Structures are given as structure tokens and as C-alpha cells.
Length: 410
Image 1 (spheres, helix red, strand yellow):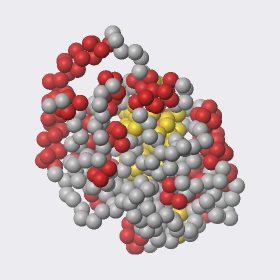
Image 2 (cartoon, helix red, strand yellow; image 1 turned 180 degrees about the horizontal axis):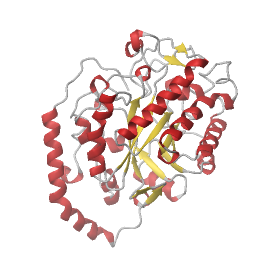
Image 3 (cartoon, helix red, strand yellow; image 1 turned 90 degrees about the vertical axis):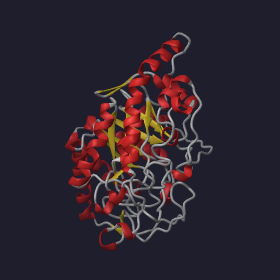
């Protein structure tokens, strides 16, 4: 993610037109889609990614999940109408979508144009977006996010320093995409007495998410953001009950999980973790032990799912060789296990077939292919994503203009 200069304004007319056209196409193409499915049904072998799955009380028609991915198109931290089209394009009946990182409070901001869920105006702005996903039959979770020290004074109330578990700044000179230049300020170490308020902020944000219509929430405990800053011993240098040993470093994250589960029900709560990653200069000396301790803690609260980034992901977008595996976490966790990080149709099918995961989250591939489950079904050619538009703030280009399979044929 990166910070851009000029703020582009939404092209509401263009997005409204695209949304209406898409709805019309759904009606026109319905019969043709059915015919094509019938033609392939006899010859197609079972596709693990497209097999149904019961996630708690949610009946999923396939296992292809829209991964949470910031798009920086929520001007003034308010969800925008053009997001109605973006998310509804990627919704399918029985499909599972996880929304982009959504800020839980004024101190949680880390980047420009990210949506919030802590004001009444933000809650109301989310409602038509969530409603359109539901109209398509999709299941939609809101990802609750606090950036911690991965922020800037310009995003903080009164220009104050961002908060963290530590007062050590991020040493990296690039953002987690591995290429965008960054300069991070010295954070303020949050006091022991302030932590309950942050826990409460997560609780209220979860309540607001359900008020907006979301089916549940995912707590963002990955990628070097605030919760991860407490988990990892490279960052957390505290001497109170929230620092030091593994149990102490997991205390705040698990307090957040408990508060959110108590507020909306554990059956509507997921958590995202990245114990093996070093994003935002946030790593751990024993990621295997950290991952296992966290999933065992999550088991105590009976949450719906655990969503983990593969160890091979060196940066947000770059994979490498690794000796580490998520299988111990997978075996230890009692709920639904979701994996993410550089998966393709082939490797996604393989991890499901081998029992390495229940669901697979796709980010960049789903971004560029709004009909990704359909393309996987037909084993069709995929659109190539344009990385330069990931965070451009344009309401159409690189956002809602990737063609569907039928459109791409003409």
C-alpha cells in the first residue's frame, strides 16, 4: 500500500451505469451460462476449489474466497458508492468475501482513503455495499484493522505519534508490497492502562459491522499491524503483562478476540495471522511456537475460522522458498482453516485435496478476475492484474473495469 498525492473523486454516473449493465447481463446471460455448465458437466472431473463447504452456519457453494485487500478508494475514510459495484462483481451465491482492511477508530488509520466502521456515517455508507453482495447471495465479513506504528502523524488525531506496543519505529524504507517507498515515524508506546480502550474499540467496531449488515468480522492480526506488533518478539519489547513471554505477547490479541466474540458471537468471528512474515519490520524468533500458541488460544473461544498467510510470502506480493509449513497450525485449529498467499487454480485445488486447508483466499487474482470461480470451473484464461492501479484511488480504472469472461471474448 502506498500514499498517493492528488485525491480523485468518484465517477458515480460511470459506476451506476456499470452496475446496471451488469445486472442486465446477469438476466440475459443466465440461460447461456446454464447451457455451458450442462455441456461441461459430463466431462468435468471434480474440482476441489469448487466443492461445497459448511463453515459454521454458513453454507458455501465453493471454496474460493475473496481475500481482504486494501484498494484506497474510500475518500475521506468513508466507503463510497463505487464499492457497491466492486464487491458485487465478485459476489456469487454461496461465495465468501472478506472486505478490505477497515479502520476501527481515529488512531487506527494507516493509509489514505481506507474505509472506517467507527462512525454512524461510515456504518450507513457500508449498508448499500453489503446489501448488494447479499442480493447476489454472497457472505460478507468486515476486516477490523488497527495499523499501529505502520502509520504517519498526518493520519493521527492532532498530528500525534501513532501508537504501538513499542517506541521503536519501522526500520524498513518500503511498504509491505516490497517496492513502494516509505518513511515511518517513531511511535508512542501505549500504556498498560490504555489497552482496554483499544480492546473496546474493536468490540464497538464489530457491533457496528453487524449494524451495517455484515455477516461477521475478521480481526486483522497479521502483516505487522497493531495486533501483530504485540505478537512478535522483534517488535514487542514491553516489560508489563503484555510483553516478554509468549503468553504475555498473545494476551492483548486474545483479549480482542474474546471481546469481539462476546459482542457478536464466536460463530461470526475470524482472525487473520501471519506468524512467519516480516511485513512492516515485524518478525518473530519462533514463528512455529507463536502460531501454535495463538490457534490454541483461539480454540478456547470457539471462533469460526483462522486465516493464515503462507510462510513462502516474503513480501505481500513476492513468494520464495521456505522450510516452514502451516500444517501444525492446521492440525491444531478446530475451526475452518483458510490459507492465502500466491495460490493458483492448481495449487489451490491441491491444498484442498490434500487437507491442508478448508478454503483458499485469492487477492490479486480475484481483483483482476471478478468471475474467478467461473474461470476456475472452465479452466479459462485469466486476466492479468495491473499492479500500478492497485492503490491508484481511481473509482473505475483498475477497480471495476476488469472484464468478465464473456466480455473478454468480444
